[in-house]
Image (cartoon, rainbow, N blue to C red):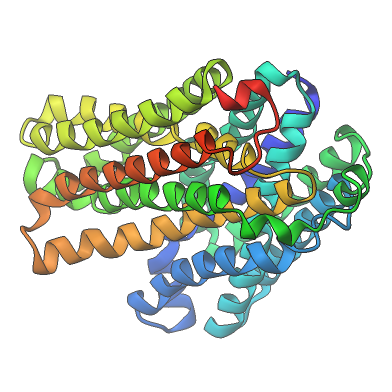
Length: 394
């Protein structure tokens, strides 16, 4: 794999840390800024909305700028946003800084996916995407626990100062290692990036991503209460168990990329089936402490085994300048799925069968994603949409 991929992974690591580390600092932020814990929790929702909103705002210019220039600009936005978080004097300033930081999220991963696939041979494209997303998985395993410790030991602002430093390093690495290129509209004869949004296969691909990650986050959001109230673990045991989940993320991410390089469509279909099955197995396993840990590791692997295939799935439906925008929208689709999934799990707890049924209901949603994927395949058979390579059409 080209060294430039690891430059993209460095940026992904920083973005992953800043997205998730706030969860471990809610009490510190709440106490320091004089707001309730629930208000501090809205900083997570504000970030998610910034990701969704940033995709169309920044993705629309993706075709006019070179990929390298856009990646550097996005990393600069990310760095400035985290600096603003570190300096925020009140809650609303911090919220605005979080939203600003989130604007870079979808477009960085979206354009980064296009750059990653252009750095390797056609039969390594999904693996290249997986390498970039390894930065995100490592952020969950290493960056978030360290950032949480740093913020609790030296104040929550110190975490954002550290992430600002990561952003500066990532910006420099991208500037040095990512090769220069022309803007994608020039490369593809001036095709408008926005034209991609009119393609049904692209829209169905985005819907597949949303539904698959509704299932992931409906189950994952409530893992801690499931482990403590149903499985019988202490609160202190939750963090080590989540490391098992994180190890599953890394393994599943790399495996999904490798399999998607061989056969994209079967991997998309198979990964959705495995994700659904993993959630159903988890529903049974949570009543046994040993089986629950094993099932959580498998759930993590199944969840991230979908990422590279789904990203390549959407890219295979777009062409030219539209690939950057479609890819960015797919990252926003992951985050929209996260938000809906967290709501769905809460609804099941408050109004449905209860906490023990959350993972079962979550397992049903990827089956709906599977139905949408089959609908997209029917369009392919009718010749609707664009497939850029024979490998993507398999």
